[in-house]
Structures are given as C-alpha cells and as structure tokens.
Image (cartoon, rainbow, N blue to C red):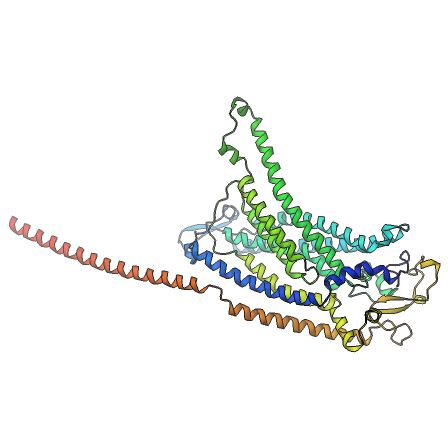
Length: 557
C-alpha cells in the first residue's frame, strides 16, 4: 500500500488493516440498513406516542387551554433595559418599553455574536482534525514497536479523547456566552427569554457535538485524489485533502469517536451532577457550622436552615436536563448506522439518570418552584428536527460511508468474492510519480517498489486519463445517489403515514374533553335560568316595594 503521509510514512501491507476491517464489518453489513430504517420508524413513533402522552398529561393537569396558565409578568431585567414607555394595548396602562431602534441593534449584536461563536467552535473541531493528520506522522517517526504498529488506532482513540475534553469545555463556555447574548436581547417575558436561550445553547451544542462526527461520516476522504497530488500542498486547508480513510472505510473511526464521546459524556455528566452540588453544599454547611453563632448553639443547625444552604434549583437546571437528553437523542438517531449500540447505552444512561436526578432534587437542591406549562416548548421542535435530520444523515452514511453500495454493485457486475472486491476498491500508483518531497524514506524490508496501491476508484498510471475517476466511480456514485433518494422518500412516506394513522390526542381524551364541554354548557344553561329567575324575583320585589310605599304615602296624605 502507498504511504499514508509524505516522507516519514513507509509503504505498508494491506494486512495491517485487518483490525479496522473486523471493527467495520461488525456494523457495516446489510443488517445495518435494516436497523437504520427501523430506528427511523422508531423515532417517528416515539414522537407520535409522546404527543398522545402529552395530551393525556395536559388533560389530567388541567392545562388544555392557554387561558388556564398563569399570566407572564414583565421580567425585571426588561424594565431595567427599557429606554422608554408606552400605553399597553392590552391593559391600557403605561408600561416600560424598549424602542425598536435599540432592540434591532441588540438583535444584530446578538446574531453576530452567535455566528462568531459558531465559527470558533468549527475552528476548534478543525484543530482536532489537524491533530489527527499531524499525530500520525509523529507516531510513524517512532521506532518499531507498539506505537508505530497501531499508529492509526492510537490516533483515533487519542483524537476522540481530546474531542471529549474540548466538547465539555466548549459546552460550558457556550452556555455562559448564550446567556450573555440572550440577556443582551432584552426579552419582555420569561417565555420569550427561555425560547431564545434554548435556541442558542442547542445551536452551540449541535456544532460542538456533531461537527466532527459529520466530517468523518460525510466528508473525510471524499477530497483525497491520489498520493503525491501537488494540489494538496497549496495551503493548510488543501492539506486536509490528504486526510483519508482506512482501506476498511471510515465507519470504524465513527464507531470509536461516537463510543468515546457518547459514553464519556454520559459518565462525566452523571459524575458532575452528583459531585459538584455535594461539594458546594458540604462547603456551605461547614462554613455555617464554624460560624460564631453556631459555636454558641450546641444543638446544631435546624433543618430549615440546612435546607436554605442547599443549592437553589434554577431554571437553568431544567434547560441543562433537556439539553442532555436532546444531545443523547441525536447520538442515538443520527449515527445509528455506524454505532448500533448507541440505543443500548442510551437506555442504560436513562435508567441511571432517573436515580441521579432523584437524588439531586431530593437531597442536593432546594425544593424547586413549580411553573405551569402546557408542553416542552421549543425542545419539542428540536426533537422533531433531529428526527427528520436522522433520516437524511443515515441515508448518506449508508450510501457514502459504508461499503454497502459498492458491495452491491460489485455483486451484480461480477462473481462476488471477498478478495476480488477488495482489489476493486484499490487503485494503482506508480512510485516514479512521487516528487522528492513526497517519496518515502523508509521501505518495507529495504525494498524499492515501483508500484503501490491506494484506496480509490481511479485510472491506472498507464491510462491516458491517469489518476482520473474511473467509469466504475461514476457508476457507484449514481447508485449511491439513487439509494439516498429512495431511502429518504420511502422512510419519509411511511413515517408520514404513521403520523396520520396515530392521532395526536387519544380517543378517550377527546371523549372526556367533549363530556366536560357538554357539562360546562349544561351548567351555564342552568346558571342562566337561575339568573333569569333571580331577575324576575328582584323585579317583583321592587314592584311590591313600590306599591307598599305608594299605599303608605297615601295613608300619610
């Protein structure tokens, strides 16, 4: 095989890629397509069943009608930011008001800040990609041993661990910046503030969590041409074209990256949710016990004062819980074709999360203040958008990242055998086309090779169109595109049919609502009759009183 990098990387044997091939084939097989389709249907059914469950909860908790919810008051921060007043079109009273010119400027600054932060997050992920390209060269420069033998595997693992640390750090920074930008926008009500804050933190979380995975799944190796291509040395960005997949495919890298990030985030978040509140509460309690007042009281602090020292349950805590579940839902649905074990880890994490949150709310936080809301708000749209996006991403992962389509094409155009298929995915390169800067300085067994193979479907060096895409490349490209279109239309069509078949509101809830409305109308009718009878009685009393007054005055006369 041709070297994986310039100069320091040696020629290598295809057999060295067996470990990645075994990892890839564990998930890259026809069953993955069936499982990806099943997960698309599962996600749609989950949404429809949640709508039914939500309708039932809203009916049981008497939250069916918006007018039953508590009125939103003006946020104190809005009153502080207001630079004028106006007459309220609802109450007719004077109220604080942020002028349109000031509000437009605030929104412009906020949107600019969001875009800049998003670009910074993308650059951070680009840094991890550059680390992958650089560290391979460093590992190959080492002496013969474990590091050099498993250079590609160690690169994937170390890059995934670095990604996990970077993601956690940037998520923490992103939440603070999102809060600052939302405060800058000066929203009038808390509902508006929560919605805009949710959009920002989810935008940052999406880029942070999924950008590297999307790059590996859809873009890595797509721009690689052939070894020694002079166009790859133009600048730093062009050098990213040399970042190529293993001959076994990129699916193994997605598996390693997703497993470390998903499972690592789950373990780290659960650990921090227990540890941080416990440390903060213990520190507050220790300081209170060491105070001068406590030294005079031998009985210790009363329970209500201990509860006061607990960490307050703010609205940000609920947003963090929703964000964690939405990110996990994205890991489960977006890349399930590459990591079918994601639903299992998500199930285990949810079981643990229930107990962690129960302990946190009961023992580590003050009692939260209940707020009446009718649904999940903007988070329901986030889950819905992830469900639709999952169908598209899985279609492209199966078509362009896995070996499913090339295997099918090879099966119908040749007598399928594994040896022949692997040879069909490799192209020939003449080592005489290497420049002095690219030519490897190390050979296998001190042999000089005149030819080597690289992953790709390109013409051989003896062809008139040397190193240009071969006819089979365009055939597979067309089949992949057709598969994406068929997969998307089939899944979207069936899921739309499922959403029509399953009503959003259960029949028994509809009947209960109609029965309540009927009873309300009957009560209003009875109340109307009572009021009319009461009016008649009042009128007769007035007539009787006026007649008695008239007779009394007649007697006086």
